[in-house]
Amino acid sequence: MAKSYVKFEVSKDVVAKTYEALQLAKQSGKVKKGVNEVTKSVERGLASFVVMAEDIEPEEIMAHIPSICEQKKIPYSYVPTKQELGKSIGMNVPCSAIAVEDQGGASNSIKDVISKITGTSQKQAPKKEENKEEKKGAKKEEAKEADAGA
Image (tube, rainbow, N blue to C red; front, side, top):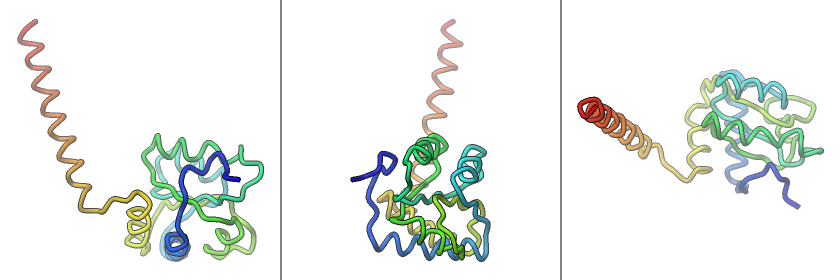
């Protein structure tokens, strides 16, 4: 049975790439381990990528993380087991969640994993920025018209 906090399935290929990216991030960047540390990192806006294990009991301890990641627009993913998640960053104990704060040499690997999860390529990102700029310009014009009409 699927857990309530698991919002999408991740393929085995993406899971393997996620483990590799986390290993690189641990070696050359900065990661936070555990639900409490991940929660703090996300709430403070320091995390750039979050990975959660799917086999957490009770699931309520993990239920808030996907929601706060979405609020802060931080990409996240899942892996099947907390044991493998811990091993991916060199721990001998299971780990429920990991937040990558400094990607280090794993930047390209993490971008690749994120693009596979979201289904978007990095080429689409500038278009979103252009749309934001257009909307800002339109809002400024509307404000000017409102001021002129008042």
